[in-house]
Image (cartoon, rainbow, N blue to C red):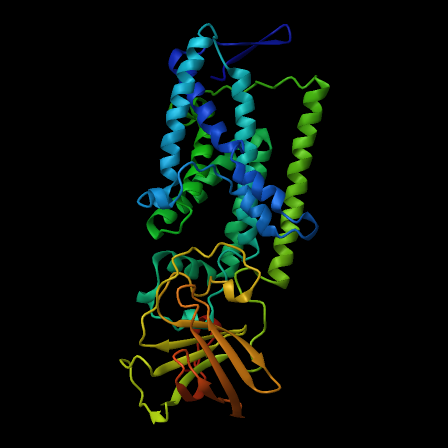
Length: 454
């Protein structure tokens, strides 16, 4: 498609084959349906943003835009439902391509239109890669595992949570992955380096798409769409790469350069590049600000002072009846964790209705920030408000399936390693609990390049 001849400063393009024209018509419609925001929900989100108090997650949600005709509930069996939308869009593209072929049967090529479609695809890819790149570069997407997460049995995790915990435990590696995505976005920004950017996308985002499928992360459709766009760009270079690498013969460089003599086109070009750079700067600043001041997946209210740690339940009294340690009793607490923020978790032999969300949403209130508890069933998570004057804790279950569970407790701290709780539990029973801190060592905290005494 790219063999070009220059004649008298005018570019004459070779005639395309019938199947090339038909494929182009199909993909032109199929891709534009999914790239150009025609969905009213996109504009509803756009105009609902408070631009004076912009949060990076607002821009992140816009960059993830994908039109949906069928909701997730209607197509539950299809990886969040949206692949059915692809089939629907493919039918529309097929019909549109057939009509287009009849109306434009004499057309010999679409070289210029193909150029502009590639520009649109490049910018669409670059925008989404920038957003995902920066939320990894500043480790926001996969935060460092909480203490409760580290004390949860491996078998209690869903597959996606295992993946997130595995990456989150190495923040520098996560930042490197983000840098790769940002680099790929900037390579796509320049027409001369698109091939290198596409190569990075295949190597990195291809793996992400596979991981989404096998770990059921929840972004199967978007990651596959990114790879599809990259493949569309790569097709342009296949003939030259085949000549160079397989046939080992000289490969002619692409010499098609669009004529930007028109003032309107020049202004459009400058506007697109300026908008992209401004978006990068704005999103980078907002992501950094969120990471340093209030990571969106982690509650921001500090926990009870100097309470952070893992506690053994030394004594548990229910309605004045002392219950010995048990892993089978549905009332007896086994252990407790105080996080650095206002979360308290309890290990008890009582079923947990799993929060199946991917926890990618942004919530202003701490009780709604559910990343720490989504995707596994090992512990009960409570948000608490501490009255440090009257020494009381008001707790409410963070799990949306158990939100009606509330505890009202008084606390006493006879020494630095003991906390005594007493009050009313979620069943209106009186409880008295003595917690003893365990100075447990974790190898990822201690490091692997220095001697550790256990």
